[in-house]
Image (cartoon, rainbow, N blue to C red):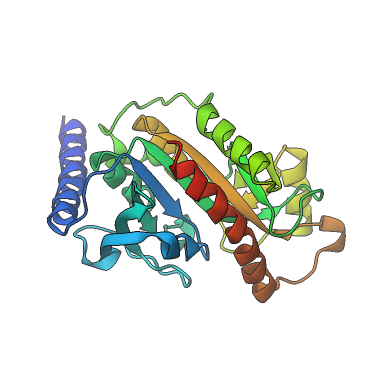
Length: 283
């Protein structure tokens, strides 16, 4: 009985935190919106195309986590691209930032309460498939969760939705088809692939890259999958696009080059922006 009581109290606390965050956000000129985007590390150029109506730093929102990462702007933006209203979470959270999964996925709960039913996530990833090119875009068609945990298994998530969430189609077939068609029409090279989500923050060894290839990964990163899991739990239609910033050749592994990774991120981001702007006109 004590355990059940504690669980119910935890559910109430989690829901109360979310409601208090949402109340504050709505009081600060952010409006409810059906379309949301989460921007990955170093991919904030989309904001420059937005007619910003209102923005709030994460740090001012009650109960909202604050990123410890560089290259994260950490803010919510409500605005328009052309005439399409959009809710942008500019900056995300990672497990290696000493956060739990409830904190990592907190923006997804908030988006759901703000009316978002279509969600696009972006990230930077390392290419396991050596046919990829640096700066290329990859639509995530499926993923492998190697973080050793799930947001659905934490007590803060209990009562938030289905406990045993179906993941047979975690990524929207309709949204993927739209993006593929846009890429073809725009003559932008894009591929579909499987994304492996690891804990980090260290990068992988040569042996680990070989392992990832063997189990079917085409790219690797340290984010996105927890958010996708919660989006599916909450019934949000979602998709994710990776910018391939580096190639992970286990036979010719070189020390990390941060400048080159940033440059490749910016190169891929230009193509990503073209796709996202056209996608917004069709969803």
